[in-house]
Image 1 (cartoon, one colour):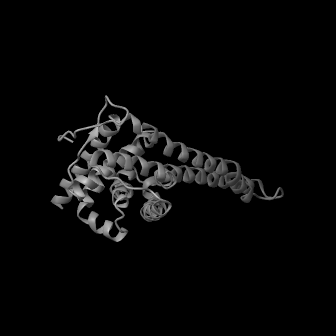
Image 2: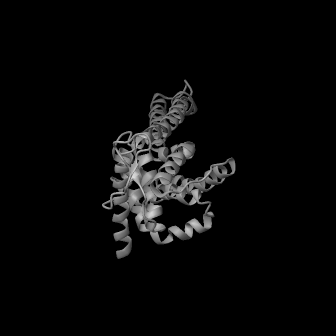
Image 3: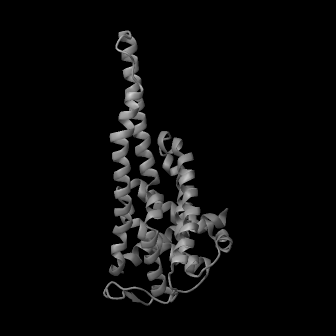
Length: 269
């Protein structure tokens, strides 16, 4: 337990290092917008569907005949209003707490490319992407993200009805959030999924700490996902190389150079 807590704070520290690395690498900034825009378009469409189709259908479903007594018509009207309000709040909670997972699934190629470029420049790891690579990476990432979605749905009662429920759920949901980004480092090396799980078994505390801080940021700060998606991708690459593989960084981003943007690593990170 003591090791887990220590590693947890190490993982939180890597999130801050991810912020620093992204800030010093302007050439990667456009990746911060693409996942958010994709998720925004999807969720706007879903919200429009709920408002224009689902809620009216639910309102029409709960009705009474004109011949019914006034007290019964009033009761049904109240029930219809409560049902529509509950459905709307449930849809809103679902959108808020699953936004990250679906954004990650849809924006996988963009975040993967960001992680690959950073890893190549910072740790000298290069690889050639192919259709087979993206299919395998997408499948393995989906295995992790869908677990996160499932846990989010199961924990919705706590997230919605328990005051500060997101604080209770943050370590578990944050763990899967971070694990889906740590996966990039293993995929770049074509490491089998089962081997990746074995590698990360001893770093669960660090992965959980990194994910928890990012998850809380997304819950507490409006539109934080715009920034935190690329931050957690870079932090995960740093954690995979420096904690799981114990590989020293060769280079890190440099503010003054926007062409390739890298210099010697700062050991304080």
